[in-house]
Image (cartoon, rainbow, N blue to C red; front, side, top):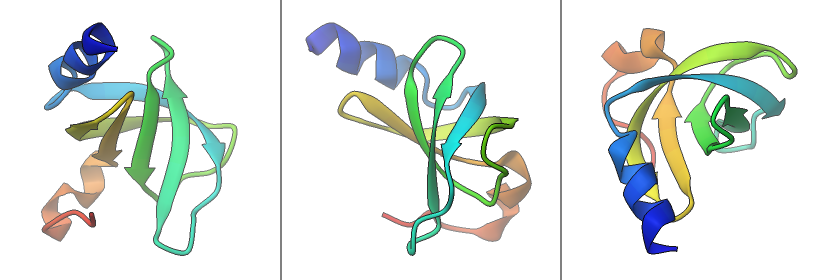
Length: 79
């Protein structure tokens, strides 16, 4: 578990290719998995079953949080 948290933290600031698994929640979040099997929760919108680039801004347990780079100028993240 400590290794997983350390790995998740090492991804902060990086861009990952993520396969979108679920559509947007009421809060606007989507879930997918990076090519390294890391669970990624991100601010969409993105189409399910498509691969998108996600910029990681936070490690949270075994998952990381991110947003699409084009949303970066949109201000603070939810959470």
